[in-house]
Image 1 (cartoon, rainbow over the protein chains, first blue to last red):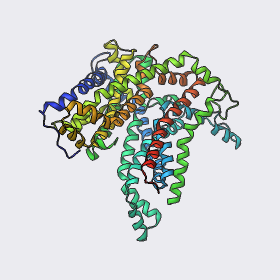
Image 2 (image 1 turned 180 degrees about the vertical axis):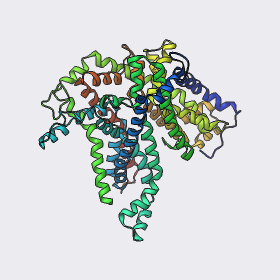
Image 3 (image 1 turned 90 degrees about the vertical axis):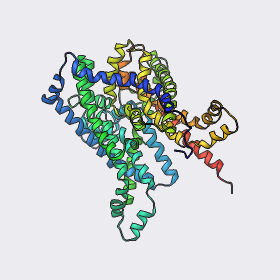
Image 4 (image 1 turned 120 degrees about the vertical axis):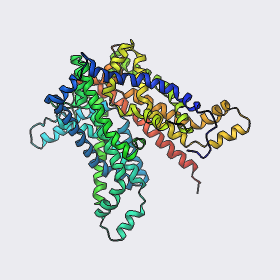
Length: 279
Length: 262
């Protein structure tokens, strides 16, 4: 905030400025969202039947468990891959850091569909990885349309969020801190473990939360690349609507997905404040 | 340990870059299905893309929708950002949170919500329906970008203009807007790209005549793996490259201009 005080106006001023956007969001965001909640208890008839079904039949619970598990795996893969990259970016010369930043930002801005398509090429039975495996004398691997292929692609797609979160904190670490730890006799690995990692903790939590939440609701990549037998929640919701027009059931699953997302974000908000997450 | 981390970082960088780069040779390949390395080279699929209305029409649809979303988003978000950044009022924290909400809701949830809602108001499978939905989803990023920009704005400039006799409207038009234009441009760009890339909601609410490019790409990957998809991906790759690299080069150039010559 600037030091200059805001012009003295009635308390109505800010609300007049806010009104167009708030009305717009109320009509074109809150109403459709509320409609999902209403459909979940009213389509085709009123009652909590869909929720009872989700809680009791094995299929929905397994899909939910699979989704959470996948989101956890992807989050930690992103952390394991993202940390060395962010560390190298922070340690590199300005020129190299800029090059790495361009690559990460380009990945960030490239459409999910383009990156998903690229992984279909890379992991396909006639792709480069299969060729190398064949050349080594093994049978052609079936990598595509498995949990492996969708996990790899989702990790690749969400990795920029993690790298940018981590780079933000690593870049801010005072260079004298690791240096003085080292001069006091800390080994390089204990400098990273006891100095760098604790200082990077906010970025790690940030990146894990972002990747986990985005992965929970992932639709495109698991459908195009994943195994048809091991779907994620979003895919099941889409299928209910597209194939069976079962809006009630789909909406109930959507409410469960939304609630899970909001719980994770709510925990983050209570601890750190949500406005930091995307900053 | 340090060196190992940096080497590992280089490997991860290759992991990030490879899928982005592979679409370029794929687009010049003669292969009818996914095959790499390409069995031969030609530019036939480029001709197929530019000559086929089944691809060019969704592309134009998406460009038009995204442009409308960018304009509408900036028009709605600008006054709200001024209110939140420059005023103190009861409930500001809540407003802040409310403006972030579209970012927190998974798109598949909004997709079925918009499907039902737009059907009710007769806007399903229409351009206005898609534009309105995409605008709502673009609000948070535009707000974040614009408010970061506005927080860095020096109010002294406005006070100087006002004290020299300019009316508030003139001050806004001739002082505030020119200083803030990169923020407006960035917010508009975020909204544009968000809409242009948005897939899940568009899959459910766009129709035969209002098909968007991501929807066409999704259907194409899912059903036929049409090689033209590599051409579209390559064009998008270069568009993103321009978008990312130009500002970097521009900043480097202006830094060089500002540095004193030896």
